[in-house]
Amino acid sequence: MEELNTISNGEWAILQCMWNSEYATLASLTRDLKDSRNWTNRAIQMMLSRMIAKELVKSHREFRPIRYTAIVDKSVCVKRENGMFLNKVYLGNKTEMFETLLNECSAEELAEVKKMIDRK
Image (cartoon, rainbow, N blue to C red):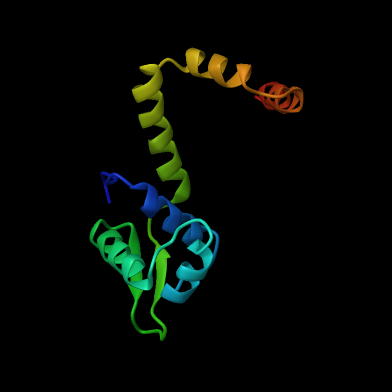
């Protein structure tokens, strides 16, 4: 897939489940998303169909129950979403974004950020 389609919040939730396991089934997705979302099996099936059409997910119908896997890499999706967020909220200004984030960090988080910068 050359151009990554827009990923909705619901699709992100499903992809997170898939990225955290070898494969997913309709039952495992329903179970994993039960607490954070109030989705029926049918709603998840409809989302999976859309995600297959968008080439985000592949279904493996040779298994029973059917297995689903993400076919988009998490790091690619995260990088793209970060870029979109940076451009939308900060007009591409990374310094402004870092300042905003640093102002919201605890002392422990700032110490960890300093360690990351020192490793760079």
